[in-house]
Image 1 (tube, rainbow over the protein chains, first blue to last red):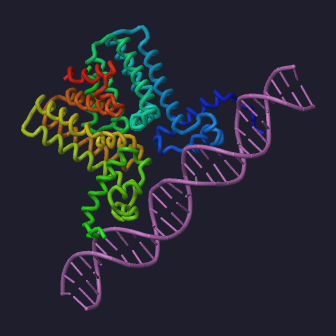
Image 2 (image 1 turned 90 degrees about the vertical axis):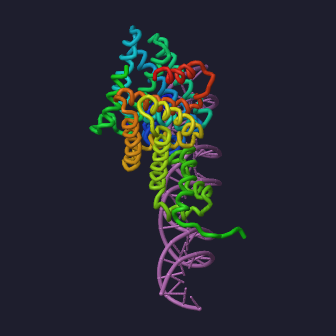
Image 3 (image 1 turned 45 degrees about the vertical axis):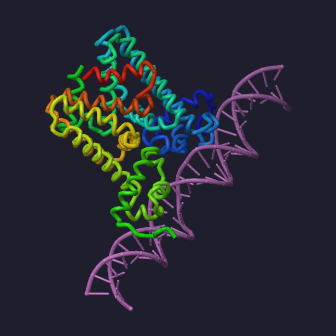
Length: 183
Length: 183
DNA sequence: GGGTGATGTTAGCGAGTACTCACTAACTCG
DNA sequence: CGAGTTAGTGAGTACTCGCTAACATCACCC
């Protein structure tokens, strides 16, 4: 027998959230199946419901964790920095850590798409609001600069989703490179 | 009996695309049902498949038309203008016409999300590329300015999706207003 | 060693899915 | 009128979905 050691519900929840992030990122709230998530997490599908109640609650928890992780990544990157230095640090860590694996990127996009549901929208707003508040506070820069920072992030998201972040396509290169110049 | 007059297949296709845009915008590629689309278009569900083959083909056609309409809207707005004037015109028409009804906005977000599928991705790339090419050409402005223009658009998309475009939320206001200042 | 509560599974329901098939009604044209 | 084409449907297939009820198993405590 393989070590049939039981885990705590909290450990399982984390495993399920890991699997859910991948699955939701790939297929969205509606497209993802709880069956696939359960399988990836190594448990039976009904146990997912015991742990999270409904699919929507699982989605909300996944998004909340995803955005919290992004915030923590920003905090580590900008630690001890101010002004443009802080923005630079967060900008580059955003590109390398978050976009590189595509999972968090896609999960983010799916979260925005799912905002028609008010409960989900509230989770997304809260996460995004925390992010903005932190960037404003740590950089200490004026609103139009912070706005441009987030705008660039959103453009990079979309270009990344289209698979054009490292493309040879000339217009794509101009848009991406234009982000760095605009700082 | 209601007048059982037949329409041409092309007319029906347009009607289906109208309905599909609404449905796909609301629920995404996976969440939308061909049943609901057929109902909204006033035809039977099997006939949707006669007209478009598969759900994915219908989605691709919907997205392609959606992005083409955006391009045409830009062209009408920027007609006879150059430089910053052209950007201003396109920027304001983007906010009023495209984001206001939320349908095209949401459809756009769903398109980015669905980019994991290579066929869909190609449609989105083509549409986006046409848009960028036009804005570059009509404005005649340097890459970093065009990049900032699209970045602002993407941020407005996301803020709109979260229902924060006209919100009282202070941080949301700062981000939105920051867009105008940054120009 | 027997109760107790948390961890987990098997079996299954009811609803909905994309898509197909066989067919009919409406229109076109010689 | 009648042959041929286009527009459109009703009924169904085979399958997936989220979710539930009932049951099993382990860890621990007295």
